[in-house]
Image 1 (cartoon, rainbow, N blue to C red):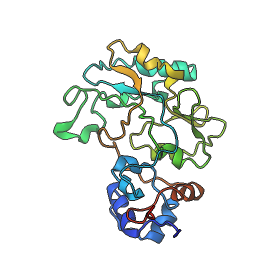
Image 2 (tube, one colour):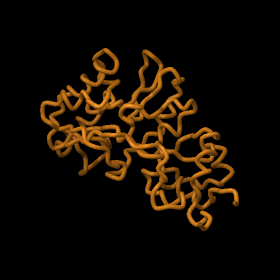
Image 3 (cartoon, rainbow, N blue to C red):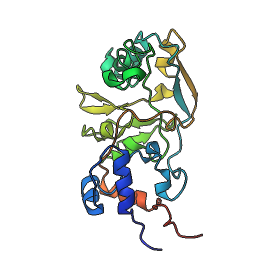
Image 4 (cartoon, helix red, strand yellow):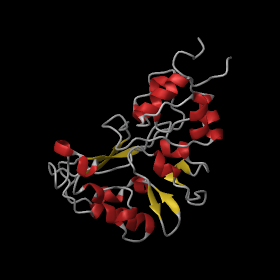
Length: 252
């Protein structure tokens, strides 16, 4: 079997899709990112792996949070409930669900123009929720310590605090900016689904959040920011054992 390679043409397309307009050679790109991109599933580049959708290696979570912006009243109770349960303190900035950042201008910030949400736009508060991504999971792929794993009870992608070294590469990798960082503990934090009973759902007075059986939400809407993540070479090599560029997969 021929060794699988990522073509320079595909790398250029990936760089352009992520907002990196500069032309990158294959050698230069590999040096920069360790020969892999996290979050390709969110950039409509699944075909680059040789199939229409990525291979499923890590089982999906049992459930996922579903948000209804038309019901959200921006009270922030979900953020408080999240941190009280997971961290033992009321600290909205550490919440795994994001409300405060979208109240005024929406996910795109004050440059959203006529499409701007929030109080200064059309009034919608777009809740930021972890999408419990299918394989390849961007934050887990970017972690050099393999500190983001699937919870055995819920399948949620969670941070193993004992393994996390606080490098924040997972924050860079998440296309929706859903990774929090605990400055006090020096580790990353993300949605744990609260052992299958999300406290944000229970705390919401407007029924703007639901916990539903898992579905792929990564295809709903666009990422909030371009992402070009550094991936450890060891992880990249493992990925290349399963994924091949379009048109290069050997015939069965």
